Amino acid sequence: MKSLTHLAETFGTPLYVYRLDKVRRAALDLLDALPHGARLYYSLKANPHPAVVRELSGLGLHMEISSPGELAVSEHAGHPARHCLYTGPGKTPAEVSGALAAGVRLFSVESPTDLRRIAELGVGSGATVDYLVRLNARAAAAGTGLRMTGRSSQFGTDPDAALAAGMFDSAPGARAAGAHLFSATNVADEQDLVEEFDSVLHTALSTFGTAGVAPSLLDLGGGFAAPFAAPGERPAYTGLRAVLEERLDARVPRWRAGEPGIAFESGRYLAADCGSLLTTVLDVKHSRGTTYVVLDAGVNVLGGMSGVGRLLTPAVQPSAEADGAAGDTGRAEVTLVGPLCTPLDVLARSARIPVPRPGDVLRIDNTGAYGLSASLSGFLSRPPATEVVLGADDVVLDVRALETVYSAGAASGR
Ligand SMILES: *Cc1c(COP(=O)(O)O)cnc(C)c1O
Image (cartoon, rainbow, N blue to C red; front, side):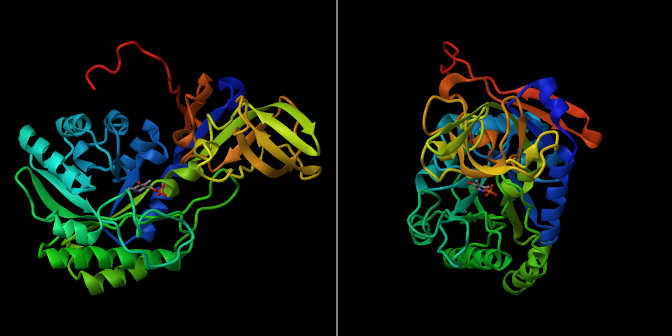
């Protein structure tokens, strides 16, 4: 990676740098690893930057969106609403109406209530809405990632309950188009992924079989892994495509003709390695045997979901000083903390790095997914990180920062 020091000097820190060529590379790699002709959804929650969305949309990916803000970004990026899948366990009537008005026609429904609401609003809008029944699949493999469903879950509906509630019987205003399953995330092992897809495919087909309905789209979810905020490479999944094609041929022989269409979803695999966070060392201090490196990027900028105590401290590991000059000598174990006035503001408890000096700029790679988007931006009212997008030859294409402001009366009409 070229030196990024000049970017930190020009735009200040904390600074997220996104490289579009890396977004492109990741998308082409994943499309290559998946069954030929399968649809791939990009989950905007990983990184909703409009330039990232535009790049992926241009490569033919569809968008998986889950909020009015993500819909707005998708539209802003020029992505067609008819190529969006609107998901989420708690859609408000207002946001569904907004999505319908924008032209979204495919929803993942998470419960009978969600389905009824979408159907009613579909009738009201005069549009016929397609929906995927989000199923809470039974667990198959013991994957390494975070399992989202398979036991009791706030996501989707258990297959038996979905059948009992008649969720596969299309209603006026809404047509049952297929199934949506998303049961694991960050699964680096290819064999575990295969087992996972096998299991969700089985669940989808047996449930639709029992319902006596032929699905037109099976969204089998994802789980494609990527490193986070530490050096590392995306897994290659070199054998995935052949195995999945073989299993689809055996179970759904007409899938190549789109009967049903097969879809997958990914956030982190597509966006993680495009991003690096540049952060300035504000202080280096010692307390009872621990070296604290105080950065201008805390959980308000990176890894905020850990900051709230929901998950473990993320073990952020800077790759190098931004100018790449740091030698390998003099590495020590340090605790990386941010500037916030809370003991939760810890990015790593034992990062092994050359002990920096105040003023140094550190680079934290693999922060393109769940970096800023999963941060506690707004917490402590510090200015959000700037985001800069680089195109070919590191040309700066876009510079912006989120705004967090109180605005009187903004909530009216929601
Ligand atoms: C978060 C999410 C994704 C993306 O997950 P990654 O691990 O980033 O690939 C895909 N689908 C759904 C329904 C999600 O909630």
